[in-house]
Length: 232
Image (cartoon, rainbow, N blue to C red; front, side, top):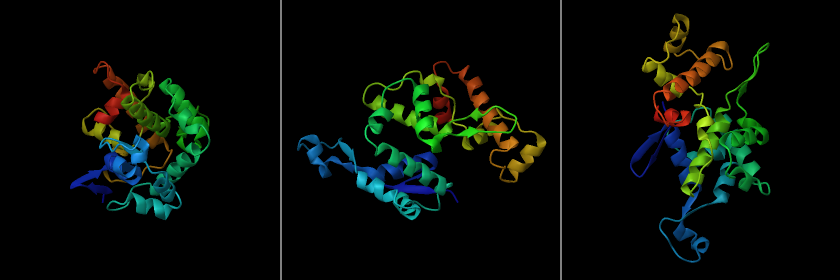
């Protein structure tokens, strides 16, 4: 069963569910934080409650409880590690300001890879050059760009980023006929047999997903790879 999150009568799943859950976890309305707005209660003012985030990061059990929702979120152990790593990083002096600095998108990705090892999604195969998918670093960069754009100006050259090489986009591309699997791989996928992490089949799907999205970009002028990823 898919992990879902319900709020105000609406049921969310996938990334939308995770975003909604985290939002409800750490955001408090201005009426609870009037001092942050010079005593003026504005309904469109919000603030982050760090204590809720720290409590959620205190243990895997606390993280699961804080997220809530129905059924269990896939890869919950890994997600907890990334969540805790990011919180510990931004708790250091000046790191949050540096993380939110307006700069080139790729510079942001490489900064995240350097200082947040858990976000370094690089495939390493014997006798081959490393393949830096950097999915998590690019996702965080995309999120930072979104936040900065709400304040006026986002990151520069977001079109230099690739799509996010995960398991959802290739499913959709295959359904649309953009990706076509060989008989052996198709049989494994159709029977829902888990592919070996970092194995040849998994890496091939991830690589060709990125290439497919880049080809789609040629037919959608002005659209970045990450935007196409979101549309899919």
